[in-house]
Amino acid sequence: MTTIAYFILAHAHPEQISRLVQQLNTPHSRFYIHIDANTPDAIFTALQSQLSALENIHFIERQACRWGGFSLVDASLRLMAAANKDGFDWGVLLSGQDYPIHSNQYIEETLARSPYLGLIDIKPAPEFDIAYRYRAWHFETLNGTRTNKALQKIQRLSRKIGIERALPAPISQVYAGSQWWTLSHTACQTVLDFVAKQPQVVDFFRHTLIPDEMFFPNHFNE
Picture (cartoon, rainbow, N blue to C red):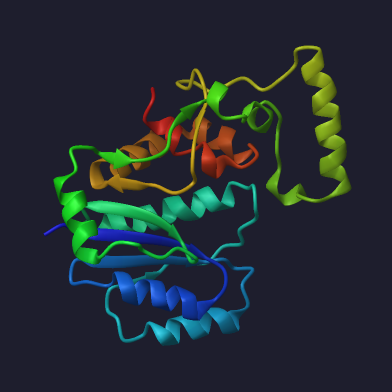
């Protein structure tokens, strides 16, 4: 049977997350959950309590996540790495607000028959307006500050005279798509290997705006 590892990124609504897990729970599924460290401890504790009867639940160490920052990518990678230690056939990245529209049997059989190594939205830059996101430096910890606004203004002026960030090798162009994906174990291992071997790519996206919509698509085009 096909083993599915569900990677869940969440920050609120423990009852809703519990309902999602209960619905997807089968003898062939495992759940790896990251709860934003900005989330009150009471919510995290409530979720742990609601799922305590299940043995296939794994909460990874919490870290603070911010919209538009690399922290969301980092949490996704850590979920993937945690599942990789246990082994799985397919990994599915979900938010705490997702809910399946098909039965577990349909999902398992569809993935078992899939001729693909992954199901992921990938578009080249001309089809996805993202150039402004990676041509300038973005510092997640400065989100919403006057310093960040001043920095972005300076960088817009710099780009007008041809000064902008260079893409890190081996990336020659940037692809983007939805943050959410379904990847085979082989594809997940490819991502983890790439991250280990190409730290300069990780560093590049660490200082890029909304990298969660770019980081993973760019592992399957070079």
